[in-house]
Image (cartoon, rainbow, N blue to C red; front, side):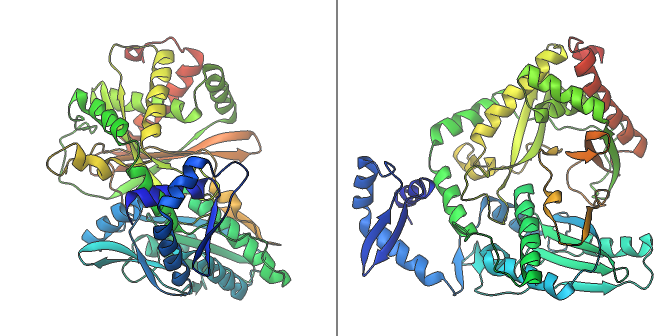
Length: 497
């Protein structure tokens, strides 16, 4: 499909203008004033191509079909293909279930979700030298039900490690695995293992919500109340392709400005010579008390910045202090779910946003907060298309050097409370984390409701080959103290921290 046709179709879809064919003729239904004379003229010019496209779309229902991969599928899929034994991209979400779980209904519920979402019937295969999505017309979940005669934490941890250390074969299997640990007749641990081609907060939110909805409907023998999906994940990929071919000049100018300061410095943070690359990681946990969390959110509201920007500022301070650099780069995952039609889709819309902060000039924290926020807003406005998708237009040779070696993530809204099962007490197990990692440092934060109020909960994951546990603890403490200083002494200068 050429760019002009795809861009037109995406524009019509975003305006909720519905197209179909009837006896070979093109028909449409549009909200009032949506189909402008200019759009009508474009549609008329591409009428024949649109009819061909719609005919192909109708034929794919109930049949296997192929499609180009999304940015996330291409990025993580190729990494997995090049490193088939790697488990860096496995993400575990674990839930404690108390009550009489109906395992057959739970299985049926997962199968209903798989039938509803093409993405969960998708494998990534090389076709004519290119990585492609291959969508099957039908599939079922292979839920591993494990009955533990000894429900000790040690045995539970062994089951978790089994999922952590089992790589995905994306050429032959789905990016979702499910394991149910039966501790007793009324106690269970539900383990969802997803690959990064699927996992991001929005996708997990949809998956958990639909699981609860289907489970409840099957138990009651009632029709599922979920509305039909407005599109499938392959349709969303067309939206990504449309974004890639629009606003190109401004996007390229943004990246030229990004590189004006030269190549990002190699962020060696460890206080000893870097040993050979190893991927063994460890995790320490942190929590910002409810009172401090409230004060921080109040500061952000008064300053006109986001809580995310405040957390990034504190992390940039840590990287500055430990690296000695004023030029700080980091990555952060960003899921571009900015339209109602893509909100209910399962599948990763993740882009790793490359952030670059200038901490020179010994600024007060209040100024640094605003500067970081401005950088974040600008970066997000251009990163619906990832850097590696347009780098060939900026550089003659393919880039191998990464733009960052540390990633910071923040869930503004935790997806884990979406799982609700009738007559079952559900508790998210939030202290589960992998012991293998690619970034040198990988902190993550999210909001959590507690009896004392909303707190910021988080983890601080680090490479054991680069940092001792004491060093990681020191960095975590500096992060927390920087957040406190923002509140009580916002005029304190960076060099005085």
